[in-house]
Length: 272
Image 1 (cartoon, rainbow, N blue to C red):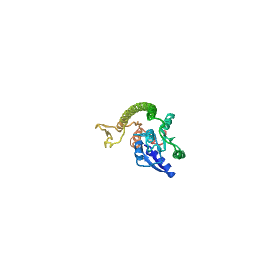
Image 2 (cartoon, rainbow, N blue to C red):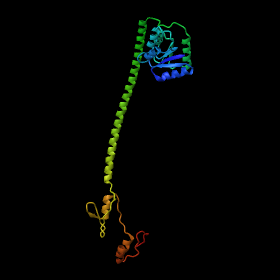
Image 3 (cartoon, rainbow, N blue to C red):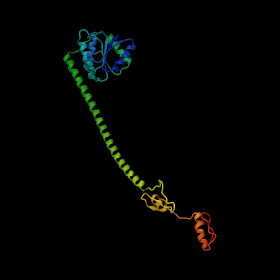
Image 4 (tube, helix red, strand yellow):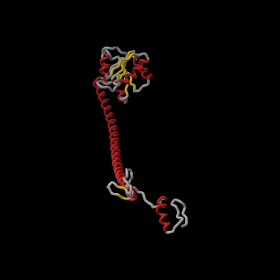
């Protein structure tokens, strides 16, 4: 059979085409009702499978136009939809002359079985009532669908607004935390700067007098090694006597006073 598939979504058309062609059927595709009618003026088909919600001309209107046509009114017509699924929608489909009403996604076997049934059914297919009544039902179906969509959109909008409010709260909290953390870092940096300025480090070439061993500071002031180191480090001093100075100065002075057997610095103490 040669089947006309009408759906504005290319993926839906492809899925249905693969299913039908796997069973040996031929297919033609249209993206809306207007394109489908144009194809039907030049192509002979054995059945139409159509979505409902499409731009330009939907599936209900397409079915009605086919049933109004002297040449096309006997064409088997299957509505295949995921949006118009209420009892009123099904009743409207029956009123305008649709042979079958399937909901997406239908199993492949269900679609093939429906196709066999509508093709084998030999009946006069026309709209059951006058067009004005059909259009009234059709308009009411559209209104119901719009109201349903409005409710869905309102619910979605409410969710988005709640999500937006949550994001605003999170951003405000994040900004507060960033400000607090920035203030903490600034305080820490200030404390670190003060600490670094207070740290006294000897890291340069030191000018020392060759005779008195005094050190010249950055203000061109000469001072003792002890004084310089005290200003530039946290070191503390304890005074002692090295062995050389002991032999040269201390021992000689004590010997003048008759003191002998003095302990040498660094060795165990001995009685004087």
